[in-house]
Image (cartoon, rainbow over all chains, first blue to last red; front, side, top):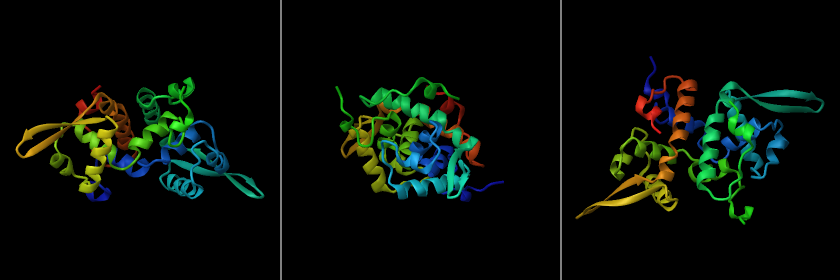
Length: 120
Length: 120
């Protein structure tokens, strides 16, 4: 049996999701990983220009939450790539819904490519 | 024609959604309003115990974003209730997907009532 004390704020599944990704950057990083970015410098290079300390901190948190794994792809010098786990990849429907909402209610926002909105 | 300068970070619809509700509390307030809470004290009374300054600030922001309207329901003393607009109510699919994700990946989270998960 689990007690509610295990939770930061409450046992609400929405609240527990937000305790992980309820901020302005985490879902932007996951968006980029879904779209095929893999390396730190690719992620840092997005149009939103995430501050690099923020990016490093969020990648560490996402790894600790098992939402991504860090894979060595070059050993000299060491270079890593970031790959979403199923837990991380399953954020996609949330991203698609936010994109729909944004397109409906924030004028002039970019229309995502079809594959992004239809991916499962 | 709109220029990208109109945007805080970029024209990405996900980013523009997060610029409004990408934090730990805004979607919790919208959850409560969807679930039938209407007054300031009902909202303050949720199990997550939102700090009241945070609640007041988010309600003001949501009103400024036309995601809710403030309606006078008693004049002496003045009492207001908060009612979601269509723009605010259309956050529901996002909440439902976060709830699904939370139930799948955060052990022991509460299972939402059926009406909540099936509402449109």
